[in-house]
Length: 346
Ligand SMILES: C[S@@+](CC[C@H](N)C(=O)[O-])C[C@H]1O[C@@H](n2cnc3c(N)ncnc32)[C@H](O)[C@@H]1O
Ligand code: SF4
Image (cartoon, rainbow, N blue to C red; front, side, top):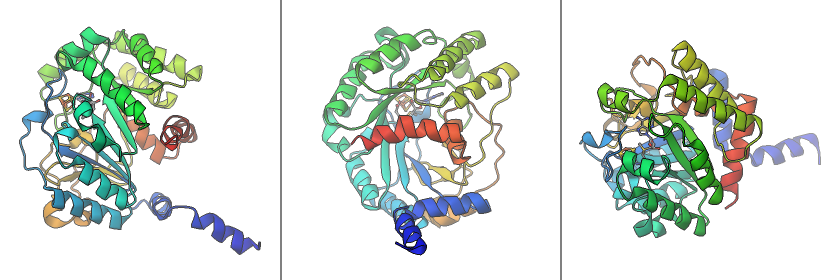
């Protein structure tokens, strides 16, 4: 085959979204490669670090969400994450998932797991599921409500039996910082991976009030000890820890120097949509009402004209996602090993 033929063969296999992503990176232009939809802020749990359920704003209807998906698909979006609140409280979840899949998107769902047993058939269409497990039974239930540990373990077992790629989120607080080993033991026994991040406070995000956040916040020395454990596990090549070593090293520096980390691509290459259709740069601004409403003005306009709202930075796992878009080779390799391989299993 001649040179042009070979180039054509290779390029025909690269999805159009990847071209757009590379172009946007080169020209520093906006391109919503990934979107996260807070499909609802309602929730059936009352976790110690989250008060998102208190925001009682308008929730888009199924046709409005489908139109949102169509508009982002036209722009080239290929990754669609559903979160909340508790996404399984939306009866139309499977309709939304299948609409996004039909538009060629890779769909993931974040859930507390409590409703998975009743809705398992609705989950079969998703590409990946993540559930939160905050420690051993007593600690998980203390942070997330009595009986919820058993429900999430049962849910993880169910998705595994259905062959749906799954991983677990653990949020480190003052109550569970010493339980990394216990949670690792559980996830290893289920043959799934673990995403660990510190509890954080952002006024327009999940933690409702600074007082409530301070009630759950770890002592810095405890968090540093947990981070050191995570870094050591990454150095040993532990297959269960999802996020990159770079992220945990950056969080450690950020805590030691008391300087939050800044992302570069929030609102540029990925964005967040709130239940009423507002488009913001990332989920740490999910409840901010200053963003333009895509359900009213159209999503392209809402994204392109996103107002400049200063961000002081954060320590959330979004930073790892951002480093992926920054094309850090170690983060790309980590993502390939821990996420792409996981979802490719299907
Ligand atoms: C908002 S929840 C939505 C999905 C689902 N309701 C759940 O709990 O898994 C998504 C993730 O954000 C985490 N989260 C909520 N509030 C947080 C906070 N203040 N700091 C860090 N993570 C938080 C949850 O523990 C969960 O892993
Ligand atoms: S963390 Fe998830 S389950 Fe807990 S209150 Fe917030 S949205 Fe609900």
